[in-house]
Amino acid sequence: MAERRYNNTEIAAIFRAATEGPLAHAQPDVPRDEGLTLPDLQAIGHEVGIAPDAIAGAARALDVHRGVGRTFFGLPIGVARTVNLHRRLSDEEWERLVVQLREVFDARGTTRSDGSLRQWTNGNLQVLLEPTESGHRLRFRTMHGGAQASIAAGFVAFGTAGVVALITALSGTLVDAMSGVLFLAAAGTLFVANGALRLPRWARLRARQMDALAQAIAEPGTRAPATSPQISKPPDHRA
Image (cartoon, rainbow, N blue to C red; front, side, top):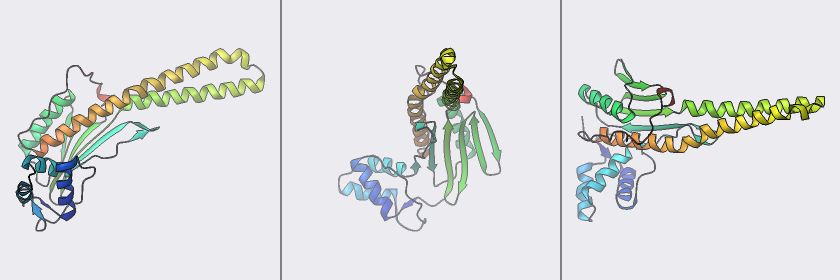
């Protein structure tokens, strides 16, 4: 497969990221016979004092799209990443990736193949390998189903408390029903807090894991770090 080439917009973004910081968004693909290759960019960078590793890292980041994960009432209920590999992933590389997925997420998961499409899933956690014109694309996505269910149950409790309060107020028995209304409101608060408080930390963890796996697959021979034993691992349905 022809070596990845970068257009003028991508080249500017790579040099900016190599000297200033990470890229915010991936750029569109460029035809293989146009633009400059990574060695070309590293040679240019060498002339102006930019380390080849910095340019290589910025170029890799260009192909990792930080997808907009799902939100639930403004909370990060989902995390997603897309990696354009610009090459075909071999059977052996896919098998090694599955091993890394099991180590990082501490879950066996299940694999499935459908023609050139492959996937590894564990509850809400999905890793999809899809063909593109330039090779393969790897997509990571997950959703915290447990937290979403907890928050939804909390709002149901709030709604029920409101309906009970309205009906009893109209019938003149609100005072008698107040203890039940307060109980429902308190239960709703606990459910919402239980779901909401764990989402930011969970989202950061999943984002770090996906970024590490994306780097590992973009750089053959690199292994993503396994999940730290100090970090609690949620059950499959919460992946």
